[in-house]
Length: 61
Image 1 (cartoon, rainbow, N blue to C red):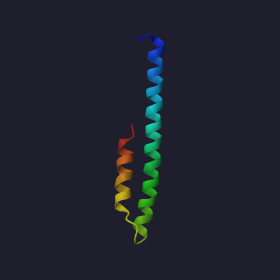
Image 2 (cartoon, rainbow, N blue to C red; image 1 turned 30 degrees about the vertical axis):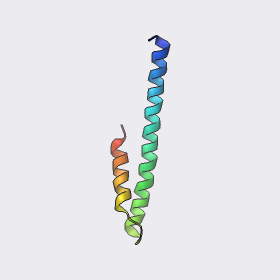
Image 3 (tube, one colour; image 1 turned 180 degrees about the vertical axis):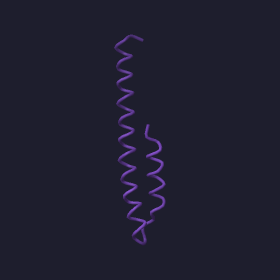
């Protein structure tokens, strides 16, 4: 593998990792907000959203 290919692979890997972390943060914050609202309002389940938020935050590198 030449240097150009190695640099591209490393840069693409960094971009993909950053994209994954950003997506997990966005989903985690959204689920945490919905979960917090769900704990206060009757009829909206809060616990599943908080569990998804906890999973998203734990999966961030």
